[in-house]
Length: 246
Image (tube, rainbow, N blue to C red; front, side, top):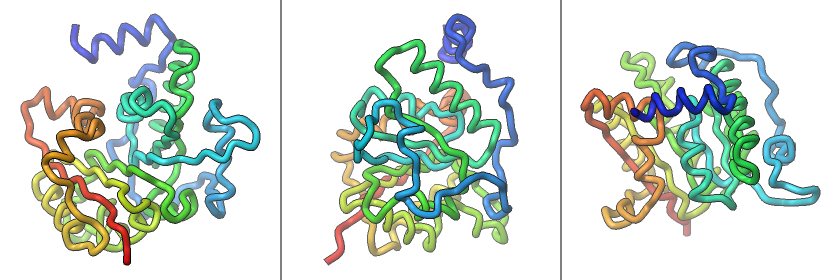
């Protein structure tokens, strides 16, 4: 039985949501205005509504962010690997966000005591990163198979860009890591070039990449990555560390 068939069978048995009922366009225009609540500042993020593992007065905060989380595969794979770490998926598409919410609720119900450290929010991460995260709050940020925006006039819509890296560097702690992967070579070169040219990021060594359990999930955990693997496609990764400032 393939992984997809296994998930479909599991959905029927456990009440997990079915993707076919939550389908949406592959990507949304990040420059358009959408209507959803946005916290004025990070202190207004209601952590208790996202994470049942938090008790009253608990000051624990989100440390991992999956930007454009899609159907949530990466979050679900990361959850048991880092059970003490709070993680958030940030997704612009409303139907996809709703799917991830329902998926997490079902997983928690079917696995008591598990998956309480992951959640999802509908938002535009290209506009509102500073509204959700304090300076140096995050340890990991993931950008997996983002929209390539092929036309040159649309490059400003790309989620990895020199200007946006300034915001990501602000949210990342020193030593925090940005993970990117794509099956579009030109986009892969763009993202790597942006990170390479930014003064606050440096590439991880081959040894560090080999030892990082998150790297192993960049392709296998996501629907897009699994599709690329099935089709025998090539992927292009760029994984960079936030360096400390003097």
